[in-house]
Length: 361
Figure (cartoon, rainbow, N blue to C red):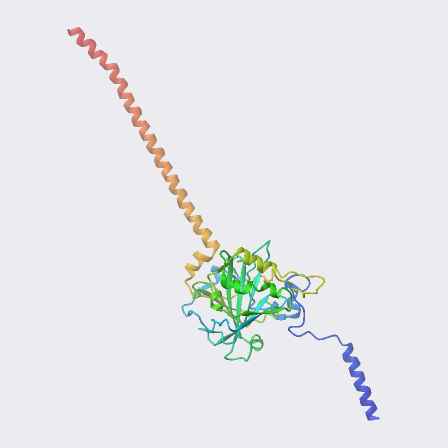
């Protein structure tokens, strides 16, 4: 009897569990997209951190910048990977990702951070403004993120991503300009990972070539992952100076990839895969360069103010010149009029003298 009761109880328990609604899916479970029903606005439903504090990306503008002379130039150890080694390029359905070896490390941060992967964000060919961070409210064409995890404290990136200061991300802003051979070492392989889940092996190269000029000039702040689960565990370094890629390279990035699998009957292009800027609350962004210099170069509002001042001064100068010319012309005409009057009086007087002379003769 006890045996039959136990068996019945087990069956009843299985039935109850089967009919229970499923529990929230794990972090990699629910589908998420940038638009549509599973777009940004719905992220907080499955990923609470996406609706929380310390979120990224943000707008970098002069009001929140503060110079910090303790921000030293970063050093990049192991970034020059031999061509004999291989990187794995993957289409993960949200971006194109390049896996990186942990021997690549950043020096100059409070802890040692080892590389794990890099990926990109971009717009589309009709609106090529797909950077995640903005400067003075303005988007760049695209943005590259090099992701590192705190290898002094945590065994891997997955564990570190859930912990304070577990990750450090280098962000490179990308603008349209001249052809970039270093970036083409990635872009030339995009057709090999056209669809979600596809992978390709590419020769190693120096990741440091992807960094901008003067990498010692950067913005630094505490933020989050810009994709679900949006953990607020990222120490962000956004380089001040952008890099350039050609229009053809940007177009290749905007048109080569799909978010869907190869055999999907409804293919979805991988475009506009960037998160909108988030509220910055009471945080500050620390910069490694003087704030006044940052405003002059980076902030369009400040640039507009400077231009307005220059135009005002130029206009005032032109008006002053016009007034001086007008006064000079008036004085010249007055002087000329005065001389004409004197000349007329002389003509009337001379005949009188002549007549008087003739009388005496």
